[in-house]
Amino acid sequence: MNLRPPRTEQQVRIDLAAAFRLAALNGWDDTVYTHLSATVPGEPGHYLINPFGLLFEEITASSLVKVNQHGQVVDGSGRPVNPTGFTIHGAVHAARPEVECVIHLHTPWGVALSMLPEGLLPTSQYAMRLHGRLGRHAYEGLALGTDEQRRLVANLGSLDGLILDNHGTMVVGRTVAEAWMLMHLLERAAQAQLRAQAGARAGIQVVTEELAARTHRQWVGDGSEWDGDVEWPALLRRLDRLSPGYAD
Image (tube, rainbow, N blue to C red; front, side, top):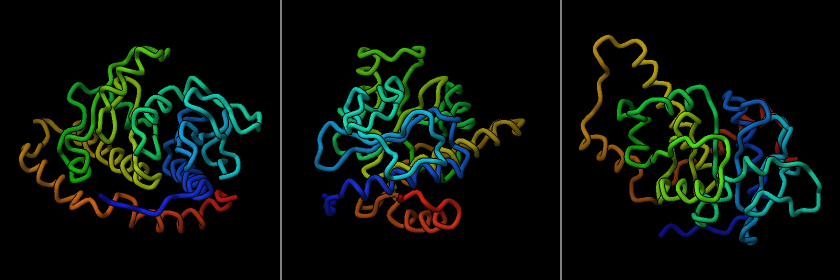
């Protein structure tokens, strides 16, 4: 088991605000919609999420809103949130207490991938990291009731994420950094696959199940190093240059 020192709420706030800003720099935002959320250390059932109406590029550590599992504001701030947008996050956080961060996006590449019956194929090294680690959840319309929450959680299981059919993508991570890097890899894999499919006349090259599985095992190693451990400090340095103020 990989034991790490406990995180503080302020650390999580800064990382989550940074993840929003980095997502904006990557063009992952959808005006004021979609969410990144994170658990509040030491406060089971409480989470941090973006206030409704702010762009990703405007998010700061102090502007994040504390909500309960139902998306209800519990920090006394009175800041607005989009409770219907948190239903996915609340269900996942409740079912996966080891998860610190949930990222759900509507990026053009992710939405396009969600339209493909075959989903993500083992066609690139990016995709190998997620081989066998992505589930699928059928589209059921805008309303997300408790019955659909149960189905979504069941489809996720212990995986790293879901392709939400005709909707977008979702990943989870044991840290904000891990979730952000997994989404980065999913986005890169989707772009590579969709571009190849658009230009191919005789199909695209897909590696064998055995090779894809072996590459995944090589990627994750013995589990002592998580996605984001190496990359996150470098990404924060980029953010300090391009979008300072996220830690305020």
